[in-house]
Length: 288
Length: 289
Image (tube, rainbow over the protein chains, first blue to last red):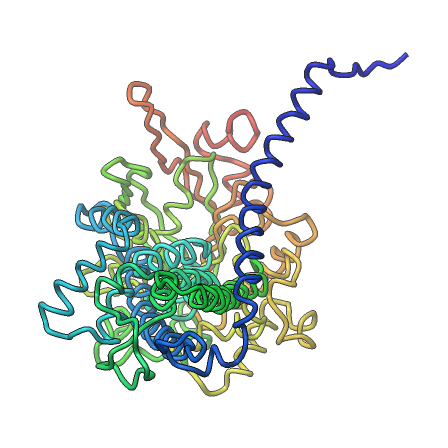
């Protein structure tokens, strides 16, 4: 005889069913992603070689490659990172360390940043076209694209940096201030170093979003047929998503194969960036 | 001697520093007040947390502040180095004089105050850096670059931690035990050559053995420093302190607001053997609180 009663059969069935539903939800996501990946790699396989990286776009599919698009992506996203990270971290430091949340303008700033993070990418494209390309006359160049993407990911960088800064325990700040450190010294020597891993991962994830954006750049006038690499801020450009979009919309089957191969390249870049983010995160386990 | 190389902060130094004798610790007479509190009221968002506290904190002694939770003893302590300024909505009325200078005077920079009046917190809060960098942090913030090794060693010796850590100064401070971390925090405060050390329940997160070592340390440190300790542990106050301030909490039954008030301030021996106020006696004999 046991004193511990077994739960009724009905309850056990319910528990098992619930677990089943959860696994199914997970499965749907993973399987569809897996199918897409395999399909893309298989389709693109014939063109997955160094020629893809070496050659420039061409009307003849056999001769076409994605070099200008890859270099364009590096230029645009690299500059975007250069613009976004300092500004985003600066804004996050202000909001977390200096802003008095009792003031209405600080609360307004906060709500607006949250809202900006949710604005569709195409809206930033319209802003970029109206203000940067035409308004101040930058033209359809690398700089305009980098600035547009910066506006797009800036809210994400700010939010991620704020979370990283907020995760630094207040006892660290108080310990520093109690030794006669100024607020700036405390931020510079204690808070920011402790928040760097979180800021880095957040920024990398934000930039990987920028890499995948096609819509705002198409609107801006990123060209699809560029047979040279960007040479500077004022250079015409194309980027991988635009190139892929262009190839897919061509009627020839060979271009679709080419597009699949370019998607694989884009995915590899994205995976590399996300792995870097994961690596940074795991290297810096919570120290307190 | 312990304050000699704390150079005033340049031409803009507030009167607090500029007018201060560098050897005040050595030259002062034990028993002279370091702090003079007159009718001190601290409010958070307009509501008084501590009301009308008046007493003197003497030089080179250990002054304990005891009382039930919510009586505002930590609030009062944080006013002494202006850490309370960091709490949004806080305000201080009355006067707190530090060696005669109004701590809340218009020319006094709280950052300069905190360089002279160090603080040890309830929970050990070492920085996520090496042991060495923790102790060197204060001097570095002050812009001191020379003789750091000597300062670090001296501070660690004063905090009775040197022998335990001298072989691993470059290892993380977070690898130390809780008691060692708290002594490291004391060493960190000592490294900037303060005049006063404020301790906010420094042993409440520690085991009895670590507590005993911190208490021994305090007895040594009072030769050179003025110490103010907040504790909820009456035995600790009786063991370590020379003077005791007993605060109690007044509850307004209509608004349910709690305000701390000073009941009695006297020599510790007096407080624990012949308290003048029946409320003190009730508290120390365990009938309330």
